[in-house]
Length: 244
Image 1 (tube, helix red, strand yellow):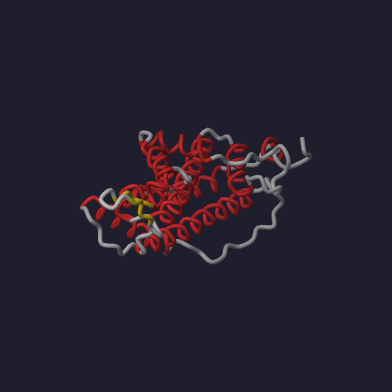
Image 2 (cartoon, rainbow, N blue to C red):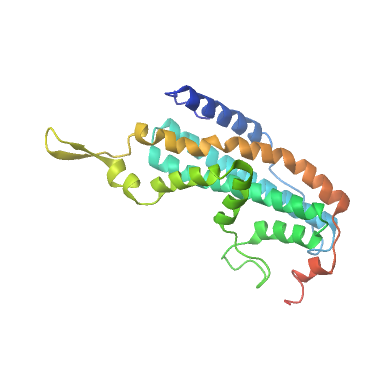
């Protein structure tokens, strides 16, 4: 939880919303799920199993980052807070994108695409785990574009400001870690960025945390749709069979 005393009413509201979401979501974490041994892409049960696995994976990532983010805030350490906060914001955007894609394709009965997106979010990456030519790596810009449709480009704006800290540009180096003392004609360096310089920008990550909570509330609805409507078909099976 963020326990830092906020300087403005707006920051107080953001902190309270962040803490409430973190508390509620922490109760949604599960330690285990049953392993499904069905062959890939052949049963509704397997698709549900993958969906549960992916959702819990994102929830665990969110909780891990949110708690580390809060610890950096409480320590008034702006740079690691911004770096962790950007990862938190990207997690929120990716999860939002996942649920939107699954929901849209489920509605259109595009079962192959429902499975494809679940599998992509489960195995996508440049690590060599995915079947060749089947699953693409996920790019954060795609997720930001998707979530911006809901929030009028404001999430990308928050992401941009966090990047100014995370990247070794002026705000993350010279401007952040020093100030000019003209009276004594010296430049003074700081061991860490003074928190008051970056607090409003760092809180951009906390601002969007309730979105993950809102999206998590959609999980059970989507799961029910998969359970009742999802069906394997030739396109679904072709994603992983034969290397075609």
